[in-house]
Amino acid sequence: MSTPQINVTPLIDVLLVLLIIFMIITPIRPSAFEAKIPAEPDAGAVIENHPYTLIVSLANDRSLVLNNEPGLGSLTDPLALILRLQAVFDERTKQLAFAETSKDGSPSIERTVFIKASRQTPYGDIARLVDAVKMSGASPISLQIDNLD
Image (cartoon, rainbow, N blue to C red):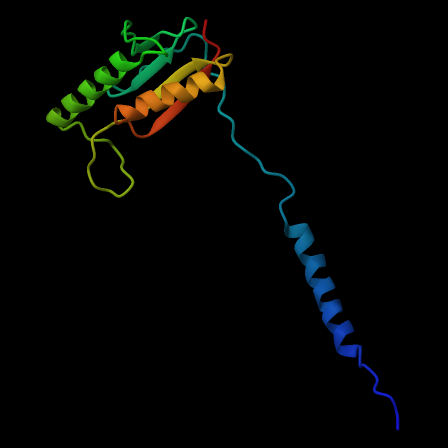
């Protein structure tokens, strides 16, 4: 009686096919991810914001400014900012100021808010400001991290 032998020929065939597949796929795989980085704006260029743009700036003294409107509280007490943003959103609702694009295609009131702070601002301060802006009903919220003076 002979002992059973394992036939390895099909195993080698499968391995060779896999080797060929990997040899073909490897050069096709992207080797680098290229991102488009926006260019620096011209120093003399005047940039005009959209009329519905809301920019909340966090000054170095932790005071809050909405579109060059000072006196909206501080980071520790953002109630004045929250109430002002809610008033702006209520006025937009009365005036039917719809957003140009919405996710589902249905008309919605423009509630986009940009938060502008310097790069040296601690993360916790930005998180507190984002929470305050969210409480006013803003959506979406975008960050503008600049080298503010």
